[in-house]
Length: 550
Image (cartoon, rainbow, N blue to C red; front, top):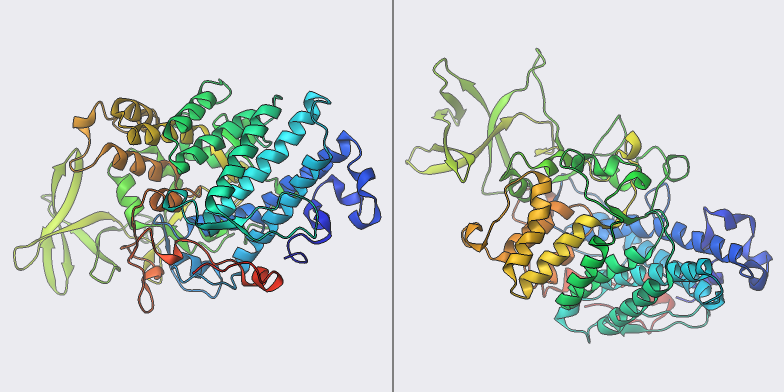
């Protein structure tokens, strides 16, 4: 670990920023960090290390894969030897190159933050204090992501092993794993310090007081400190610095230049000229093929589409782009489809008679497509030969890969109309309302919880919940809050944690290659060993005292 993670005291972590012109091994650290300009350049290096690179590697891109692919919002259409497949199907690898890169980049950035914290002088100026505060924030955010990937959810026990707390820049200081509770305590301490030190107004591409408050709201929520979570969410909401995009703007959230996005609290800003390399290996490249760029092999899951589809007017459906086929005349081809007992899509073309009757043929038998209105939504079905009702979907023929229809995900693409340019978002205003909603739901304050999720539902253009009696049958306030979090925060690295930290089971009974092979995970209980990743084997090889996850 000394050689792999903390080597040469951050020499590599300054790649891609102004500090490149000062080769680290050729200049004394006192000269490098001797003034505010040097500290600022070094801090940019920490941002750069966490942001990642133009080939889709680095801390934030790998965090997205490790956090999002094990969720229930995605469906992979094939198998691959890439390590991402084994996070997706819960057959995690201790040798995963993606996990190792995430760990290594995270600790390089942490040591960089430690160096700034050690060298900076608090109280010298507002600028210096803010700079130091940024590094406290970045260290806290990095530890928070690391402990959630490699440590069990906080509420499953604070004595479970988390990750090593490396709090110095000394390369000979190689700590063993701390507990989850100890790591969370450090995260809170760092964020409170960051909140205290940061007072300047900066763009949302840099850490600010509000960014620290927003992350504190999430951290406290994960800890079960619900009032503190709601209070910090309110601080951000009431700061007046941020505003929700309109209903019409929401589907193009990710296309905006981050500096012009009023809803983003903090993100790692990507630039086309320095952070984009044709788009083929960026995060969005797996989700869609755009202007000839991208693999387009992982799609929106059926269960996620069904949840959003309860209200076809939901503006968040704009983040999903079905790839429809057309006939020789350029017209879409009407079909019905369903999911069979093997979790495979079955499509059948339909015909419409002059009287409006719609039929399809399956196994040489013709069936009429029937419908009924349920809670304001049209549900299609047919009666099979035995008189049993079979629910189906009615849509148009789609392009498929290995039998899986291509529901492209656009949330990680198209920034400034560049196919797969994307700036990873850490916090945005919508999450603050959802944090409040969950916190109040758990405190038994249904009116406050519903008021907060109604802000999000109204913005999405769908009906709100005036009271508990209006909730869908069989659902609690917490149920609808978690559903709203799923719909709003999909593909932003939240869903896996939202399920397991609430002691719920991940339901993956929908089409996708996660169900391929022997003993697939149809459901993942919150106490399963593979809820967390293995510690990278190469890190244990370098530091044998690190204890591996079961």
